Length: 59
Image 1 (tube, one colour):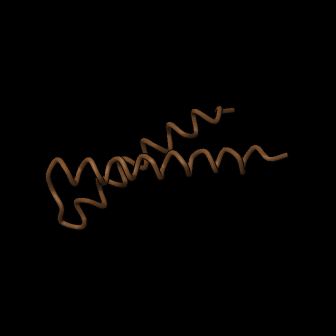
Image 2 (image 1 turned 90 degrees about the vertical axis):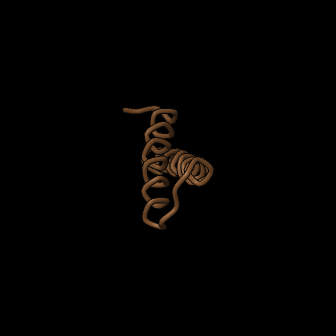
């Protein structure tokens, strides 16, 4: 069983990848858009990972 931090880390990594993929799909490139989309994706992924942990481990 993974801990809350594990779910958060996996979610953040997946969110980072999805944020960068979304950036390229929207035709953006460069360091600043990469930082914005990457940080936003990592933040959203971490939050969703933590929420998923809470839903899966509810008793």
